[in-house]
Amino acid sequence: MQIGFIGLGKMGAFMVERLLKDGHEVVVYNRTHDKIKEMEKKGAVGSYSLEELIEKLTGPKLVWMMIPSGEIVTNMIESLVPLLSKGDILIDGGNSYYKDSVRRFNELKDLEINYLDVGTSGGIWGLQIGYCVMIGGEKKIFEHCEPIFKSLAPPEGYKYIGTSGSGHYVKMVHNGIEYGMMQAYAEGFELMHASDYNIDLEGVAGLWGKGSVVRSWLLELLTDALKDDKDLKDIKDYVEDSGEGRWTVLDGIEKSIPLPVITESLFMRFRSRQAESYGAKILAALRNEFGGHNIHKK
Image: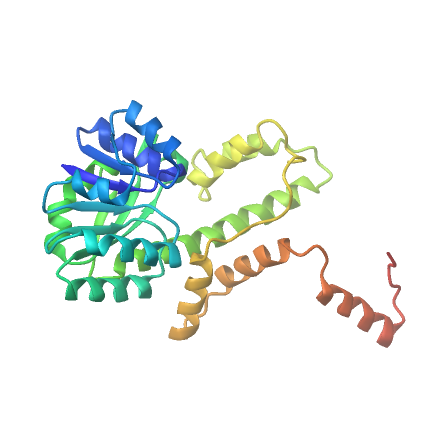
C-alpha cells in the first residue's frame, strides 16, 4: 500500500522502516528535514511540506500522524483538512486522549474524511519485534488499512477494538497498567538494593524473566538498564508522565472505579519531580509540635 507518514521521531522512523521492509510505499514528512533525508536513504519518498506530501499520494489518500498529542495534533489536522479530499483517510497513531479522538472523528466525518484512532505500543524496540496496535473507528476503514497494521505488528499483534475512540481508550488503560507495573518493580528493586545482601540485581531481573509469575518485557529492559551500573548513578530520580496515566485515573473517577495502584504510581511520579517536599516539612513540623520530635535543619 501507499501511505503518507508524518512524524519521524523515535517510534515514527522505525515504523516507516518496518513498512518499507514489507514492501509498502511510504511518503514521509517531518518538521526537521534531516530526518526526511535519513528516511530517503532507506527507501522512503521524501516530501518537504504537507502540500508536497499530499500531492505525492494517490486517492483515496492514507496519512498516518505519529506526533505528540493535544494541540499539535489539532493544528496538524487543521493544516491537512484543506489538502485532503472526500474519502481520504487520516490515522492518529499517537497517544491522543480518546475523547479528543471521538470529537475529531465526528468533525472529519462531516467533511467525509475518514479517521482512525490507533493506539501503538512497542517503543524503540518495535522495529525489531513489531508494534502492538489497537484500532478504533469504522470497521470498513480498518479493513481497508489492515495491510498496514499487519506489517507493523507481530503475529496476532493488532486488533480492531471498536467504534471511534476505542483504540486510544484501550491504549490509555494499557499505559495506566504500565505505570503500576513499573512502580511495583521500582519498589521491589529499591528494597533489594537497600538490603544487607549484596544482591546481583541485574541477575535477579534476568532470573525473574525465566518462568516467574512476575516475568515481563519490562524485566528484560531492566536487566539491560542494570547491566553497567546497579546503582544507576548517572540517572536522576526524576520521572515524567506523558498524560495517559492521568487520563486513566480521571476515567476511573468519572466511572467511580477504584484504581489505587495506578493512581499511586502516578502520584509517585509527581513526587519524583519535587526538589523538596513542602508536605514532608509540614509532617515534620507537626510531629515536633505535638510530640517534641526532632527536626532536621538544613
